[in-house]
Length: 128
Image (cartoon, rainbow, N blue to C red; front, top):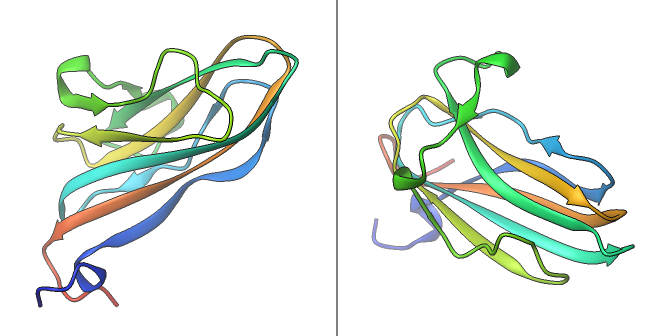
């Protein structure tokens, strides 16, 4: 199939919520997907919330096994400090089975944020 809809899989990576502390998103299983990206959406920032975003990878779903993805394996248009009411892309070029998004907090009060993982170049198509 040539349509994009049938060749994309969207998976919740970080439930949209007001985040007042650093938080790690859900482990995303990349099995069967040759390409993946995370789309982060932000909303209101309260009290000069200073949050950033990074990707972490692992061969297991155990939280302690996740490590930051090497900068050479990430394509990103996210600034060091996320802005209110914005969207950012983080492309993953690594080879681990599991991926997650992690919001970091450098200061301030909170940010409204959520993320979705988009997988493509899938082993099984069309996506159900």
